[in-house]
Length: 376
Image 1 (cartoon, rainbow, N blue to C red):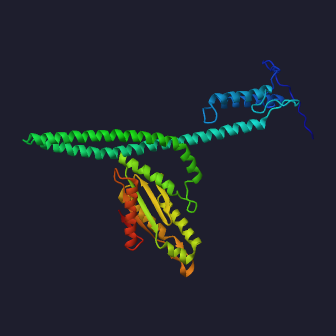
Image 2 (image 1 turned 90 degrees about the vertical axis):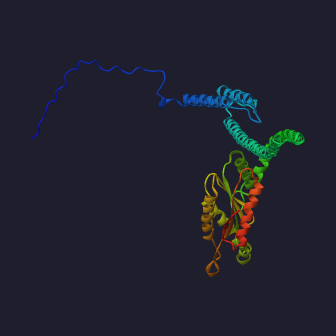
Image 3 (image 1 turned 90 degrees about the horizontal axis):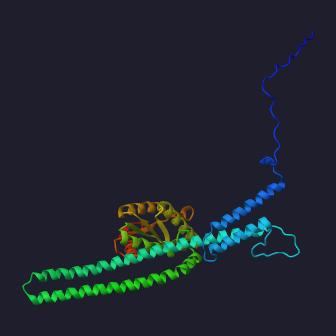
C-alpha cells in the first residue's frame, strides 16, 4: 500500500527577498586576470628596487647616492621600459624588461655590501685591539717611571729631615732631574705611539686581506693555527694588563711523537695529531677558550677568565682524554700521552714572557717522566 503526503507550502515571510549582489568593476583578488596580476608584480618589483636604493649606504666602490640613482633607473625600466642601467637601448628590438640583468645587479650589490660590512667590522675590531695594546704598553711603562719618581721622592723626604743643606739641595736637584726625564720619556713615547697607531691603521686593510688568504685554521688538525694563536695571546695579555683579567695558558706536547711516526708511519702520526686536537677541543670548548696548533706535535690552549687551579683541572681532564687516543692495531697498539705546562699570567707580563713560562713548565714535565702536568 502506498501512502501519499501533500507538501504544504511554507508561510510567507515578512522579510524582503535578499538583494542581488552589485556588480563591481574590480574582480576579487583571487580572480585577477593574468594581465592585472603581472602589472601588480611589476609595480611591486619596482618598489622593492627603490627600497634597496633608499636603504643603501656608502661603500668603497659605490656611494649611497649613486646606488639610489641606479635603483630608480631600474624601477623606471620596469615601469615604463626606460633604458636599463649599463645596458642601454636596443635599437630595432621591441622593448622588454631585463629581469636577469636586474637580478645580477641586486645580487652584486648585496654581495658588495656584505664584503664591506664584514671588512669594516674586522677593521673596527683590530682598531680596538690596537688601542688596548697601546694602553697596555703605556700602563707598563708608566709603572716603571712612577716607581723611579717615587724612589727619588722618598730620598728627598729623607733628605728633608737631614740637617745638611748640601744634602737637601743635592736630592732636590736629583728629584727635579728625575721628574723632567720621566716627562720627556713620556712625551717621546706618546709621539712614537701616535705614529705607530697611524701606521697600523693604514696597514690594517692589507693585513686583513693577507690573513684571509693565509687562513686561520691549521689544514691538518682543523684547529686555529700559530698565526691565530699569536694574535689572540697578545690580546689576552694586553687585557690582563689593562683590566687585570685572569687568564691561563696551557702548553702541551705529545710524548714520543717521533717514535710514533717511526713505528707506525706518518699517516698514523697525522691521525694522532687530528685525534689529539679533537680531544683537547672537546674539553676546552668554552666560547672564550682557544685551542691552537703551536707547531709540530705541540698545542696551546688559552683560557680566559680562568684561575690557575681551574686550568690545572682542565689540563688533567685533557690529559685523560688524550690517553684514550690509540695508535696502531692489535698487539702493537698503544695509548698516546702528552706532557703539560700551565702558567697564570701576571699583570704587566708580555705575551712572550707568559709563553716562555708555560713552555718551561712543559719541559720540566717532559724531563720528569712525561705524561705530567707542571705549573710554571
